[in-house]
Image 1 (cartoon, helix red, strand yellow):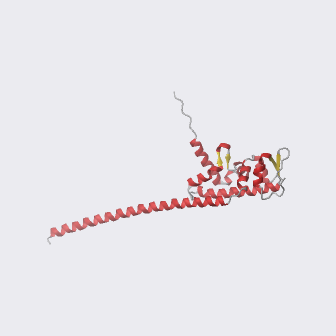
Image 2 (cartoon, rainbow, N blue to C red):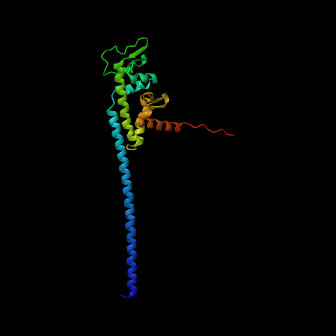
Length: 215
């Protein structure tokens, strides 16, 4: 074999090696891209599964007394919330009798305990202590559930969709805002406060914007 042929053969082998390396690099890049996509898919699935688990635990922890307690306490004024925290008896309108019967069904021993006098129901220390335990339990459970949303552990869209019913802008219900303020400031439940603020911002953004005047 002449030197020319040897040089040509070596060039072909070199070129083939370069092509082979290029192919390997391409395959490695494609494998890396697939691996990244798989990791992202696994991460998204894990966040959805965690959101479902959060919702399951939240639902399992509910009975008729907890939603009723939240609905009742949501209507209390700041002064009434202060009485609740300090366990001081206070009066509420007779219209709350049914919801109070659900909230207090575990401690009511007399069918006339919630009878109104002059249109008012007087809540005694037994009633108030039970309501306070229930509402704090409810807030703590919600705070734990929303911590997974605030820290991005659970799927945010799923959590927002399932928990947005707790924030009602049309009637000014912001997850027991008065009580949270009276207890230790709204920052005492940071995940709840962040959730309310986030939904408020989305609500404000969705409002129709006034058109600018045409000169």
